[in-house]
Structure formats: C-alpha cells, structure tokens
Length: 222
Length: 107
Image 1 (cartoon, rainbow over the protein chains, first blue to last red):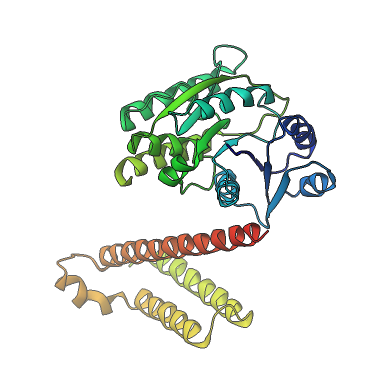
Image 2 (tube, each protein chain N blue to C red):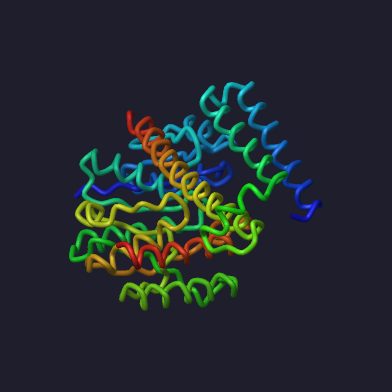
C-alpha cells in the first residue's frame, strides 16, 4: 500500500527542515507544497537531499486548503492509496505517523482524524474554540470529531474522491469534517501529540468567525 | 434638498469623475467604460443640482420626497454593484487558483 505524506508549507523556514528530516525517517514519499512562501522556505527545502521528496510550488499564496488539495491531487495521480497530512510548523509529532499507517492498513476508515489531547497544555481559548467547533459540527452534520481542527489527518483515495473540498484557507479541516458527516463516510480517530512552538500560527478569532459562516453555508449547500 | 448634502454629493461625484479619468489614463478603463462612468456621474450631478427632475419618478413610485427616492435608488445601485463585484471576484479567484495549481502540478 502506497502512503504519501503531504505537508502544506507557508513561511516556515525555521521549522520545515527539521520536520522533513524527521518525516524522511519513515521512508514514505513526501510531497511538500510551498504555498507562495516569502521567507525563503522554498529555497531552503530545495537544497535538501532527501529521497522521495517532491516539492510543488504555488507561485502565489492560495491558502492551506488549496495547498493540501494540490498535494493530494499530485499524490493520488502518482498512484498513492492514501495520504497523511501534516503541518509544516513542527507541531505534529512524527512518531504518530505510525498510528495513521496502522489504521489505514487495517482498513475500514476512509478518513482518519488526528485527535490532540486537548486537556493538557492547550491554551484555554483554543480548547474552548475547538470544543465549540466539535459541538456545532455534531449539531449541523451529525458527526462528532473530538478535535475537528487538527491538521494531522489521513485520507484514502476513495475518501478523497468523495470529500474533495472547496476551501482554500483554514476552513479546510472543518469542511472535511462536514463532508465526511454529510456523505456518511467511515471515519475514525487516532490520538496524536502536539508540540507547541513559541510562535504558533493557525486560526485567529477572525478566521473562526469566517469558518462559522462557512459552516452555515455548507449546511445549506452540501 | 439640503444645500450641505448637495455640496457633498457634488464633490463626491467630481472626485469619482477624477478617479475614473485617472483609471482611463492608466489604460485600466476603455473608451466605452469611461464614457459610461462620466455619463453616470454627470447625471448624478444634474439630479443633485435639480432634484425636482425626479419629482415625477417619486410620485410614480409613491415616494413622498425626492430625497427618499434618491436614497432608495442609491441603495439598490450599491447592492447591485457589490453583488456583481463579488461574483466577478469569486470567478477570478477560482480562475487564479486553477492556474496556480495547474502550474504547480505540471511537475
């Protein structure tokens, strides 16, 4: 079974090299999609000599969702059976990749959501936002994912065909959950560990409001 | 109509004419587009100076004051323009996304 790792990248010059070095130990094909980085990330990774590393480049920044879609399109076109998405900021512990591989190999799940232990070391605002998100998704789409915005997740080729998303930005994770719920796709969760760096980026409160509006739109249109 | 409002509306229209001409000089608008904008803002100035011209329209639409008719008309125009701009932006975003992704996937 061919499994690829997909890493959407935007301005993570300080972390991406370490992430790639760690991920490469798994000997899986890696697809990095540089999403219009302006900090020299693309140059940095271009210098790396890692087997099975493919670097794709968005000439302008389209957003995380678009980068994930480009990576998935490439991997599945390249005959991958499943892909694992990881963030480029080093938040995700590479040793959890094995949990995803295990779940994919067992079969039965087309989408595997990573679930962080939110009761430990997570800022309160983030914890509450996450829980509220999960509850809203449960009400709107009858699917409960304990960590609906975790970017560490896997999807099979079959699953991708059914839930190929439209979101270009940070709404992608929530849209995936919405589409999984709407299409009654088999899904499961694996616990993952998170390493919080000093400058954690990600979803802002403004992004969260935008995503909430999108959730209502998806409820009406999906 | 209140003279202060008329002055503001005329100044606004004149500044919009200035921006339209500026865009034309930068070749961002073609001849037809600049003509349309000039006619539109010219009409706005005429109506602002002679609001009584709209009296007949106002009574047709059962609006008591000409000012109310202009406000309602303005709102309708703005909503129309915003909707149209939104649709165009969405279309362009989609095209741009497809192009950028196509180039990335050429590898």
